[in-house]
Length: 88
Image (cartoon, rainbow, N blue to C red; front, top):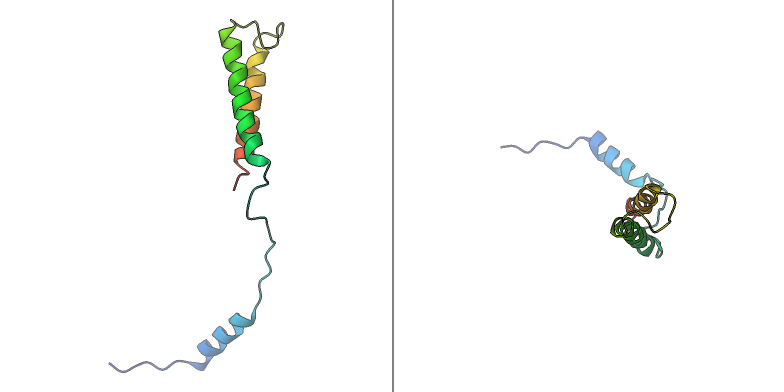
């Protein structure tokens, strides 16, 4: 089979595209050092808060607010999940 000829236009386009410099914003490649410990702490504090609420038959960790203790516990867990989405 005969070899097809390269066109000049293709060669010129390739040479032109190599000269173009694309500027991209530089983002950090790693997470901050505080992110992972804070994320894990949020998970554990939330878990501990909910377990304490159930084990003490809804009297603690903050007496008098009732089932809002569950909201606080899940709030800590939500903070942990929010930080987990930013972890690289």
